[in-house]
Length: 245
Image (cartoon, rainbow, N blue to C red; front, side, top):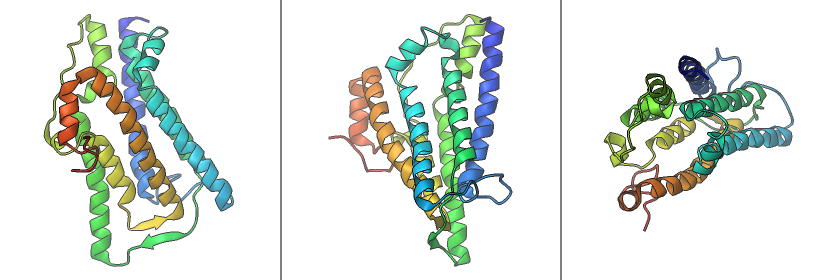
């Protein structure tokens, strides 16, 4: 694959991922103009709907975690260029999210519905704060490296990537995984929690806990005692909670 083609693929994957991310915001927010969302989609009896939805969440979790592991990356980069590995990871995430959006089965019933206008505004504010934390967190370290553009750019220019260094800017001083913090807040902050939305929030929270456990292993292997000390001082994705003894 030529260097220019690698860059083109990376840009296309980034654009697709960004579009899927925007759709995810609307999907979780259950905005009425969305073709599908957490409370609008295919129909099935509650038990069948729940099983299908759990399978979709599990598919996302498996794809997102397995493809991020170092062992998988070593095997995968034996087939594809390392310069495009991260971009293809993002593309795979887009495919899995598209399946979630297309085949999600809402489950009727209300867990809570906030009638007070101030309360609704507070919860919508938290919803948007969650997504803001997530988005800003991608820029605090290296947004372009996270989504594969930097790797493709260095490959096109023939530049060797610099060794990764551990940094803990802004949100990373309060939690080790602020991207997951953003997800957690955004998925739970809603003034109208349906059973389907609750299943989505619980499922992604379980994924967050499991995903962090695997990610921490890689970070310990990469940064050693520096990360071990950091994990003793700072919570996982909720401040003060999840510090390691």
